[in-house]
Length: 239
Image (cartoon, rainbow, N blue to C red; front, side, top):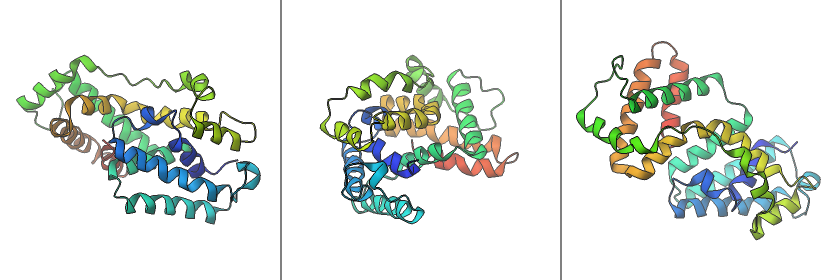
């Protein structure tokens, strides 16, 4: 079985899934991430042409690959939010903890109640400015459905030279990057509507919504589940 972070590197190096994974980030950061992932592949396969036959799957090599990848991003001054999102992809593939799932659910719940202005029981005061911002994103809705399962044929027919190269490394299991995509999207797509809000509003205006959701999520979760509450900031930092 492929090492989890290796799978993430294969996925984020693709052309096929770029917009779905990183559509909210700057093209410069996205291209830097893709190139850093691609730079790691030759070492992962040790110059061979078959990942499953040629790679060293030792924990030491996998961890070195992960550290070298993030060091590459740091050297290129790639933004922290996109790095944090890659970290969430990795956690999703390893198995989402109860704490991370709880924090994500609370964030989604606060955002949904804010969207519908169901605010009677909120612990954090709401401002007229925030209400105006919510009115602006009203047409965008709360779509939290993962569409990952629709992408298998798109992946297998990708015209990208790099994507075809990755398939050639997979020992006949061409679907590996697609299956990784489905696994990470099951979790990360839960908050996709917030990325859509940010893209529509722009960072300056969206920051008011982000800060409010973060504050209210902490107000609701800190006392009853402080361990899960610690995950709120990590999730919100990807936005």
